Length: 114
Length: 113
Image (cartoon, rainbow over all chains, first blue to last red; front, side, top):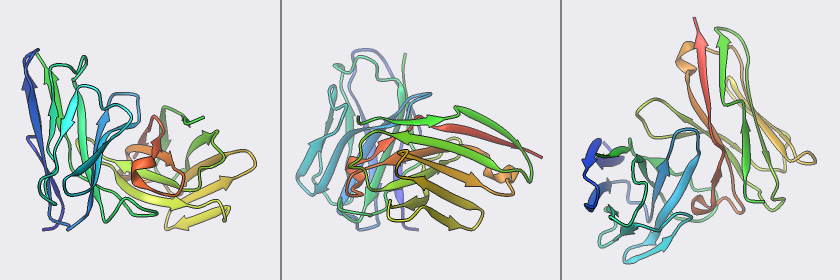
């Protein structure tokens, strides 16, 4: 089946630890994105990548890092520098980052800092 | 100027009724207005989208109404069904690029049987 796979679905992290969220797509899409979703707020863009080996900061990139070594993979690392990491994280992809290209979302990873 | 204001925060509608969710924007450069539907524990999915060259777009029971002069757009769900119960997000962008989307805060819709 084609789609976007995020893993794990639930993740618990101790304060001060880095953690990496996985995102894989088999849609052959060039562009991939990471969003953060908090209760009562809309989706906020963390990072995006339009092509392999290139990525750009979104609106709330501080405390996060990404890599794009393969077209199908766009992992997100939540570092200890992120002050409030507990949230629902969504990965998405689109054919490209241009006009009117629908974004397809994964099912999300819920990160909880304990 | 980059905000998209969405209301109401939550909405309860009886089965068969009309659900109406409203959004307002300030940036007149926005020219792409999609609506996303999100079920609990799932990622959002594109429901319907409109560009400002039309005032209304209909797909099945879902209609977007667009008022360019008022800088407002709304989602109407006709004959609402319990299966429509979800969170709905409006969004806006300039040029339609996904990385430029500004999302509203979401509306939690509950359709009672």
